[in-house]
Length: 68
Image 1 (tube, rainbow, N blue to C red):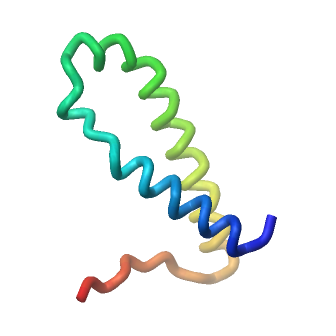
Image 2: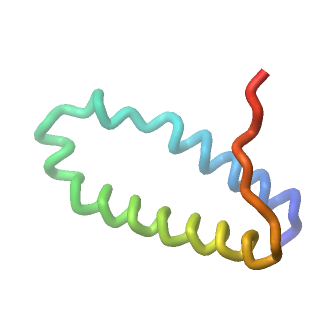
């Protein structure tokens, strides 16, 4: 996959996750979805950690962007 495509997909994933408002979910819905939500969060953590480690292994740092 081309770099531009990968970056586009990452940006789309960030946007999609930004739309998640778990605090607005009814308690019953949260309880029903908790297993799937937990699995998704663990999978995301695993993938993000792998990508970050690959960047660090190349001697680069991951820096938080400076806001304007």
